Length: 456
Image 1 (cartoon, one colour):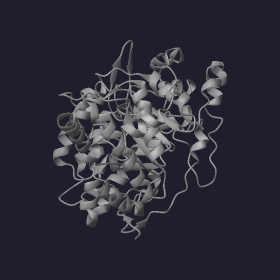
Image 2 (spheres, rainbow, N blue to C red):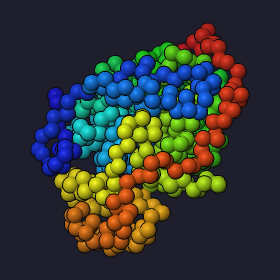
Image 3 (spheres, rainbow, N blue to C red):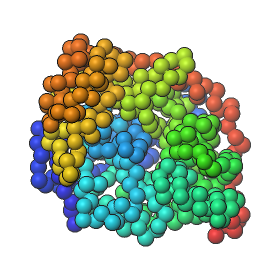
Image 4 (cartoon, rainbow, N blue to C red):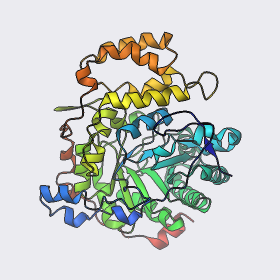
């Protein structure tokens, strides 16, 4: 059964009743393997050159996921991904996390949750859940939409309600000692079930540990067992552990310390697997620094949306414009495009007016569609006035065209029509990877017999 997306992101942005999503080929994971040993010996100039040496697009394939935008609930929806793709052609995009139960129970309304415009490729569907039967059904239902990968939010990533509830249940009923073993076994089984019901690659996103289960060996046990139980060969590693016992998902993004050394040790100890690093990397400069240190790929979160982080002595201008705008040229080595915010907004206007109210009950409305734009003019002249005008325009404007007419008068033409600077702004985030290889934990040796007994 082939599904249709209820809208098109083709150049005209005119709504169509049926856009059949075509099957897209994907790259080979071997194409973006880093070379940890070589990266330590190269000069800065040679390292910069090496970043682009494998960025060769073969017909019908995509560049590797050297830069990906993290899945964020209530943020990385279709509207944000449309805006992101107008700014970067090569970054890998993720959906919001979708619970398997949502997909299963909304079988008659799947376009609302799963449809996307073809231009959003390469795109990854992230699903979560703790019921193997529902994970299997959800995967089958998603196949009709031809995502490029399916990612499972591991129970070591307690950001979704289902994962958080599961971990709390383990802690209170099974005892914290059994959390890791129960989680590990389930994730291995879940990845096997997902892989058995799709023909695209499957990946896992996880943290480096939970509470006191945060040793490097325990993380390696997790990677070893999941990759042994399933065809999973790509792991996205959030470089913080998860804290339970009253610590919210929001605090879990900042309170646990970053341990990048765990990530780089995984590259050493699992050379047959692929790893993407996530957590605390807030600029294109930081992405390239991580890759020069050997990272296969980098996932960026709120820095690619509209959050501003104060990182002494720098203020990182984290917005779609200041982050995504440099991905194609600075990360992938593509030609500089001279795109302006004015051009982006013209195309986004056509998209927004084509989808207004198409979900039913007046959604999406103007406020929904403006949400991804709120950081677009951060620190620029007129930004404050533009936001005040936007608050007023939400009450009266019925189209994105009228909204822009009412609000963009606050932004000078010199801002709207200015392309990005030739170089990405400095952030100082590259220092996080200096001398990191001197801090790596001792090499891991798989404990086959012990693991078989513990996780049987």
